[in-house]
Length: 48
Image (cartoon, helix red, strand yellow):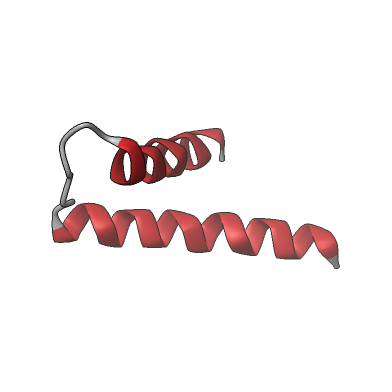
């Protein structure tokens, strides 16, 4: 779980605050979406 969160944090920061504008590859974007959905479901399961 920690690996997914770290990756998403790096991904978000690089996209917003990088010196050079970074356009991720489609595969990277899909991977980030999958990890974000996993983290979201993890949190929702614990809120029930």
